[in-house]
Length: 297
Image 1 (cartoon, rainbow, N blue to C red):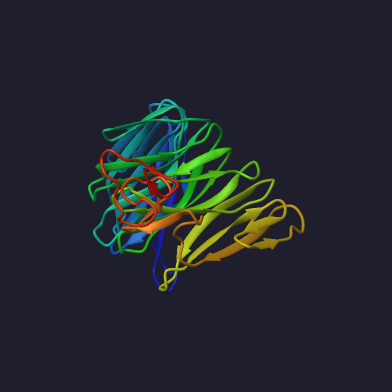
Image 2: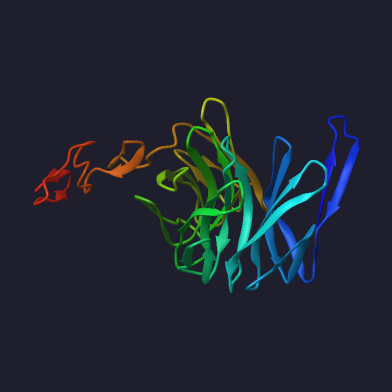
């Protein structure tokens, strides 16, 4: 594996290589450049050498995160995972230099002090790290099948957005989706503290896989990927021409997808059953009552 730096004129600056005794590859959105540093994520098996740092995988594949400067030097490298197949697909850094990784894990895996156990073949993974590479938190979403976070972005206003796919039934915080096909795309929004703020589902009866997510200055979310049959995006349907068709979708005001949910204190909340937001935001039921169908009873 290698990293190459070019000048703004396209002139070669340097190239650095990472060796591995078995296999190593970057995530599809596994490189992020911030000021004078580059952050690289992916998966490896065996022993991977980043400059003077060597990492040894614990399982089939482990996640790696490496920070490089603009002079070809690896400042540090970290490994995360367990005995199964763990993968990092995307990385982003916010204005406070916190690092966020999107990917997937299987079986039982450790991320800092957090031990996660997958519900199915592999579960979606999002984690936050300090600028030194220390894990702050790790969150998972899973079904009985295969789920993954494919890319991640930040609006630098306290929110993260991920592109993902899921199978069967999966819950993104208070929002639960049932897949229409073998793999459905989704966009999910999180706070930088790891709270799920909202999500939206798309897809059809076959496979649609998202690969990239982006934001514009107005806060609209863009998703790119491919579909293998007719795709359903909100209220719009896009026909399938043949093979794998590329799609690009734009979403505005990504908050709560269903009528029974409301945005309470910037969290997508089911006001039909939420004790602290019963029927409407900030309507709190007494300690002796429950919220049923939006009414304190």
